[in-house]
Image (cartoon, rainbow, N blue to C red; front, side, top):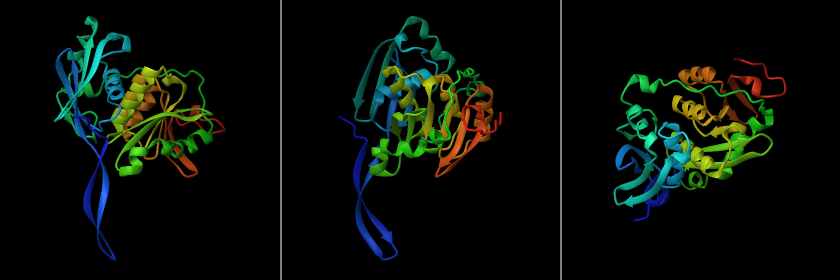
Length: 273
Protein backbone atom coordinates (compact mmCIF):
# COMPACT_ATOMS: atom_id res chain seq x y z
CA UNK A 1 0.00 0.00 0.00
CA UNK A 2 0.96 3.66 -0.26
CA UNK A 3 0.64 5.73 2.88
CA UNK A 4 -0.65 9.32 2.64
CA UNK A 5 0.51 12.09 4.95
CA UNK A 6 -3.08 13.08 5.77
CA UNK A 7 -6.60 11.68 5.53
CA UNK A 8 -10.04 13.31 5.46
CA UNK A 9 -12.44 12.26 8.20
CA UNK A 10 -15.99 13.38 9.09
CA UNK A 11 -16.86 14.89 12.44
CA UNK A 12 -19.25 17.22 14.19
CA UNK A 13 -18.21 20.75 15.08
CA UNK A 14 -20.03 22.01 18.18
CA UNK A 15 -20.21 25.82 18.25
CA UNK A 16 -22.19 28.40 20.26
CA UNK A 17 -24.69 28.75 17.40
CA UNK A 18 -25.18 25.04 16.84
CA UNK A 19 -23.57 21.78 15.71
CA UNK A 20 -22.39 21.21 12.16
CA UNK A 21 -21.04 18.30 10.14
CA UNK A 22 -17.46 18.86 9.05
CA UNK A 23 -14.71 17.05 7.19
CA UNK A 24 -11.24 17.60 8.54
CA UNK A 25 -7.83 16.71 7.16
CA UNK A 26 -6.01 14.78 9.88
CA UNK A 27 -2.28 14.05 9.83
CA UNK A 28 -1.49 10.37 9.44
CA UNK A 29 0.69 8.75 12.11
CA UNK A 30 2.21 5.34 11.38
CA UNK A 31 4.90 3.09 12.87
CA UNK A 32 8.22 3.51 11.10
CA UNK A 33 10.75 0.77 11.88
CA UNK A 34 14.45 1.54 11.57
CA UNK A 35 15.97 -1.77 10.46
CA UNK A 36 19.75 -2.28 10.31
CA UNK A 37 21.23 -5.39 8.72
CA UNK A 38 17.96 -7.25 9.15
CA UNK A 39 17.36 -6.29 12.82
CA UNK A 40 14.70 -3.80 13.90
CA UNK A 41 16.44 -1.21 16.07
CA UNK A 42 13.65 1.29 16.78
CA UNK A 43 10.00 1.88 15.94
CA UNK A 44 8.96 5.53 15.81
CA UNK A 45 5.49 6.94 15.27
CA UNK A 46 5.81 9.44 12.44
CA UNK A 47 4.13 11.13 9.50
CA UNK A 48 4.61 8.90 6.42
CA UNK A 49 6.34 11.51 4.27
CA UNK A 50 10.04 12.08 3.57
CA UNK A 51 10.83 8.69 5.11
CA UNK A 52 14.30 8.48 3.57
CA UNK A 53 15.17 11.88 5.07
CA UNK A 54 13.81 10.72 8.43
CA UNK A 55 15.76 7.46 8.32
CA UNK A 56 19.05 9.09 7.35
CA UNK A 57 18.65 11.86 9.93
CA UNK A 58 17.72 9.40 12.68
CA UNK A 59 20.71 7.19 11.85
CA UNK A 60 23.07 10.16 12.05
CA UNK A 61 21.69 11.79 15.20
CA UNK A 62 21.51 8.43 16.98
CA UNK A 63 25.14 7.71 16.17
CA UNK A 64 24.39 4.60 14.13
CA UNK A 65 26.45 6.16 11.34
CA UNK A 66 28.63 9.25 11.28
CA UNK A 67 28.64 9.66 7.51
CA UNK A 68 26.22 8.55 4.75
CA UNK A 69 29.13 6.74 3.11
CA UNK A 70 28.92 4.14 5.89
CA UNK A 71 25.58 2.98 4.47
CA UNK A 72 26.01 0.24 1.87
CA UNK A 73 22.37 0.10 0.81
CA UNK A 74 18.94 1.44 1.75
CA UNK A 75 15.33 0.75 0.87
CA UNK A 76 11.84 1.66 2.05
CA UNK A 77 9.28 -1.14 2.37
CA UNK A 78 5.63 -0.28 3.04
CA UNK A 79 3.30 -2.72 4.81
CA UNK A 80 -0.34 -2.59 5.85
CA UNK A 81 0.78 -2.03 9.44
CA UNK A 82 3.56 0.49 8.86
CA UNK A 83 6.80 1.24 7.07
CA UNK A 84 10.27 -0.27 7.27
CA UNK A 85 13.37 1.80 6.55
CA UNK A 86 15.98 -0.87 5.83
CA UNK A 87 19.72 -0.17 6.00
CA UNK A 88 22.72 -2.31 5.26
CA UNK A 89 25.80 -0.92 6.96
CA UNK A 90 29.54 -1.14 6.55
CA UNK A 91 31.04 -3.73 8.86
CA UNK A 92 32.74 -1.24 11.18
CA UNK A 93 29.42 0.47 12.04
CA UNK A 94 27.57 -2.58 13.24
CA UNK A 95 29.04 -2.34 16.73
CA UNK A 96 27.38 1.07 17.15
CA UNK A 97 24.01 -0.68 17.24
CA UNK A 98 24.73 -2.17 20.65
CA UNK A 99 26.14 1.09 22.07
CA UNK A 100 22.89 2.98 21.60
CA UNK A 101 20.21 0.34 21.34
CA UNK A 102 16.57 1.38 21.37
CA UNK A 103 13.61 -0.94 21.64
CA UNK A 104 10.60 1.32 21.65
CA UNK A 105 7.39 2.50 20.08
CA UNK A 106 8.17 6.17 20.49
CA UNK A 107 5.32 8.56 21.30
CA UNK A 108 5.64 11.73 19.28
CA UNK A 109 6.09 13.92 22.35
CA UNK A 110 9.29 12.28 23.56
CA UNK A 111 12.47 11.57 21.64
CA UNK A 112 14.24 9.70 24.44
CA UNK A 113 11.65 7.10 25.46
CA UNK A 114 12.99 3.57 25.43
CA UNK A 115 16.68 4.24 25.95
CA UNK A 116 18.06 1.33 27.92
CA UNK A 117 20.05 3.34 30.50
CA UNK A 118 20.22 6.75 32.15
CA UNK A 119 23.81 7.03 30.93
CA UNK A 120 22.63 6.73 27.34
CA UNK A 121 20.17 9.58 27.86
CA UNK A 122 22.96 11.78 29.27
CA UNK A 123 25.44 11.14 26.46
CA UNK A 124 28.26 13.62 26.02
CA UNK A 125 27.79 16.03 23.15
CA UNK A 126 30.43 17.40 20.79
CA UNK A 127 31.13 21.10 21.20
CA UNK A 128 29.95 23.19 18.26
CA UNK A 129 32.88 25.46 17.29
CA UNK A 130 32.53 29.20 16.90
CA UNK A 131 33.32 29.67 13.21
CA UNK A 132 32.49 33.36 13.21
CA UNK A 133 28.96 32.83 11.88
CA UNK A 134 26.69 35.68 12.97
CA UNK A 135 22.97 36.41 12.67
CA UNK A 136 21.29 39.80 12.48
CA UNK A 137 18.33 40.54 14.71
CA UNK A 138 16.07 40.47 11.65
CA UNK A 139 17.25 36.94 10.84
CA UNK A 140 15.90 35.78 14.19
CA UNK A 141 12.80 37.98 14.18
CA UNK A 142 11.70 36.71 10.78
CA UNK A 143 12.71 33.07 11.26
CA UNK A 144 9.48 31.49 12.48
CA UNK A 145 7.34 33.58 10.14
CA UNK A 146 9.54 32.56 7.22
CA UNK A 147 8.93 28.92 8.13
CA UNK A 148 5.15 29.19 7.66
CA UNK A 149 5.14 28.89 3.82
CA UNK A 150 7.05 25.62 4.21
CA UNK A 151 4.21 23.97 6.18
CA UNK A 152 1.56 22.70 3.73
CA UNK A 153 0.67 19.73 5.94
CA UNK A 154 0.11 22.02 8.91
CA UNK A 155 -2.08 24.23 6.73
CA UNK A 156 -4.28 21.23 5.98
CA UNK A 157 -4.35 19.71 9.46
CA UNK A 158 -3.22 22.26 12.09
CA UNK A 159 -1.56 19.35 13.87
CA UNK A 160 2.08 19.07 12.82
CA UNK A 161 5.47 20.54 13.67
CA UNK A 162 8.11 21.83 11.29
CA UNK A 163 11.88 22.18 11.35
CA UNK A 164 13.61 24.57 9.00
CA UNK A 165 17.17 25.58 8.18
CA UNK A 166 17.91 29.29 8.12
CA UNK A 167 20.96 30.87 6.52
CA UNK A 168 21.76 34.45 7.54
CA UNK A 169 20.52 36.91 4.93
CA UNK A 170 18.72 34.17 2.97
CA UNK A 171 15.97 32.99 5.31
CA UNK A 172 14.64 29.41 5.34
CA UNK A 173 16.25 27.35 2.58
CA UNK A 174 14.92 23.88 3.51
CA UNK A 175 12.25 22.46 5.84
CA UNK A 176 10.46 19.27 6.81
CA UNK A 177 7.21 18.48 8.69
CA UNK A 178 6.06 15.71 11.02
CA UNK A 179 3.63 15.06 13.87
CA UNK A 180 6.69 14.86 16.14
CA UNK A 181 9.05 17.79 16.57
CA UNK A 182 12.12 15.56 16.88
CA UNK A 183 11.04 13.57 13.83
CA UNK A 184 10.75 16.80 11.86
CA UNK A 185 14.31 17.75 12.83
CA UNK A 186 15.63 14.29 11.92
CA UNK A 187 13.94 14.62 8.53
CA UNK A 188 15.51 18.03 8.02
CA UNK A 189 18.98 16.80 9.00
CA UNK A 190 18.63 13.79 6.71
CA UNK A 191 17.56 15.99 3.80
CA UNK A 192 20.47 18.36 4.40
CA UNK A 193 23.02 15.55 4.48
CA UNK A 194 21.71 14.03 1.27
CA UNK A 195 21.64 17.44 -0.47
CA UNK A 196 25.03 18.56 0.80
CA UNK A 197 23.71 21.48 2.90
CA UNK A 198 26.23 22.48 5.59
CA UNK A 199 24.56 22.62 9.02
CA UNK A 200 27.34 24.80 10.43
CA UNK A 201 26.33 27.66 8.11
CA UNK A 202 22.98 28.50 9.73
CA UNK A 203 20.37 27.78 12.39
CA UNK A 204 17.62 25.25 12.95
CA UNK A 205 14.17 26.83 13.36
CA UNK A 206 11.48 24.92 15.28
CA UNK A 207 7.73 25.34 15.74
CA UNK A 208 7.94 23.80 19.21
CA UNK A 209 9.55 24.15 22.59
CA UNK A 210 13.28 23.46 22.77
CA UNK A 211 13.72 20.14 24.52
CA UNK A 212 16.74 18.00 25.33
CA UNK A 213 16.66 15.81 22.24
CA UNK A 214 16.49 18.81 19.91
CA UNK A 215 19.66 20.28 21.42
CA UNK A 216 21.33 16.87 21.18
CA UNK A 217 20.44 16.54 17.50
CA UNK A 218 21.58 20.10 16.85
CA UNK A 219 24.98 19.43 18.41
CA UNK A 220 25.45 16.13 16.59
CA UNK A 221 24.59 17.81 13.29
CA UNK A 222 27.10 20.58 14.02
CA UNK A 223 24.52 23.39 13.88
CA UNK A 224 25.43 26.40 16.06
CA UNK A 225 21.97 27.83 16.77
CA UNK A 226 18.38 26.84 17.55
CA UNK A 227 15.47 29.26 17.12
CA UNK A 228 11.95 28.41 18.34
CA UNK A 229 8.52 29.88 18.95
CA UNK A 230 8.40 28.51 22.50
CA UNK A 231 10.67 28.12 25.54
CA UNK A 232 13.62 25.85 26.22
CA UNK A 233 13.54 23.41 29.09
CA UNK A 234 16.09 23.99 31.84
CA UNK A 235 18.05 20.86 30.96
CA UNK A 236 18.03 21.74 27.26
CA UNK A 237 19.54 25.12 28.17
CA UNK A 238 22.29 23.49 30.24
CA UNK A 239 23.16 21.23 27.31
CA UNK A 240 23.18 24.16 24.89
CA UNK A 241 25.48 26.14 27.17
CA UNK A 242 27.96 23.28 27.40
CA UNK A 243 27.79 22.46 23.66
CA UNK A 244 28.27 26.05 22.49
CA UNK A 245 24.81 26.40 20.93
CA UNK A 246 22.87 29.66 20.74
CA UNK A 247 19.26 29.30 21.92
CA UNK A 248 16.73 31.91 20.79
CA UNK A 249 13.21 31.31 22.14
CA UNK A 250 9.78 32.96 21.89
CA UNK A 251 10.81 34.19 18.43
CA UNK A 252 7.54 35.62 17.21
CA UNK A 253 6.16 39.07 16.61
CA UNK A 254 8.84 41.70 17.11
CA UNK A 255 10.93 40.11 19.84
CA UNK A 256 12.71 37.01 21.09
CA UNK A 257 14.56 35.76 24.17
CA UNK A 258 18.22 34.73 24.15
CA UNK A 259 19.42 32.16 26.66
CA UNK A 260 22.92 31.07 25.63
CA UNK A 261 25.86 32.17 23.48
CA UNK A 262 24.18 35.40 22.42
CA UNK A 263 27.41 36.60 20.78
CA UNK A 264 26.20 35.06 17.51
CA UNK A 265 23.38 37.63 17.35
CA UNK A 266 24.72 40.95 16.10
CA UNK A 267 23.67 44.53 16.76
CA UNK A 268 24.60 44.99 20.39
CA UNK A 269 22.83 42.07 22.09
CA UNK A 270 24.59 41.41 25.44
CA UNK A 271 25.97 37.90 25.86
CA UNK A 272 24.37 35.63 28.47
CA UNK A 273 26.82 32.73 28.30
